[in-house]
Image (cartoon, rainbow, N blue to C red):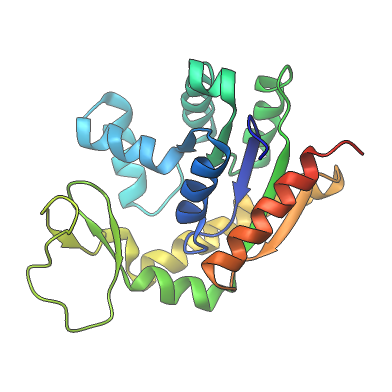
Length: 221
């Protein structure tokens, strides 16, 4: 098994990125660095960054490049990321962030950039049915008929629908994704660094395709 990889996972929210990144983190024994998780932790802790991020997130917008670049650059200097590698989930989201990451990682280049591609209508259906534990962040899927209040199996917290998981908020985020994040595909595609994975398949099939793409990128040409 290959270890010590440095990966970027791109894809619309609802593409199953988070779950697949966690599986790959365990498979390759590297940290899963989710900028969404980092920002939500800052919001919960009430830090200066958290208060700023909360206002932006509630408005359905993306946090600015300068803040995100600084946040990630600091995280990649920690020992686990420097020594073992990492899986970046949610960064970069813009070409400016990608260019900054290339500078940050110049001594330890990224091994693979993978886009998990899922149709927009499937994304909206997936996220609209998502429910999240208010305390530990565990995700669930609503199928209708759940008990109220819905109690988390992991920690006993309340399971709720996040304010930004409504169809209107999802469509707004997807519009932002198309205008700001999709150019990443062109950026990495022109460099021959992009692999696109069909994310509409079963989770196990998607995971197999992801690991195959990563392992192929690590083999000597």
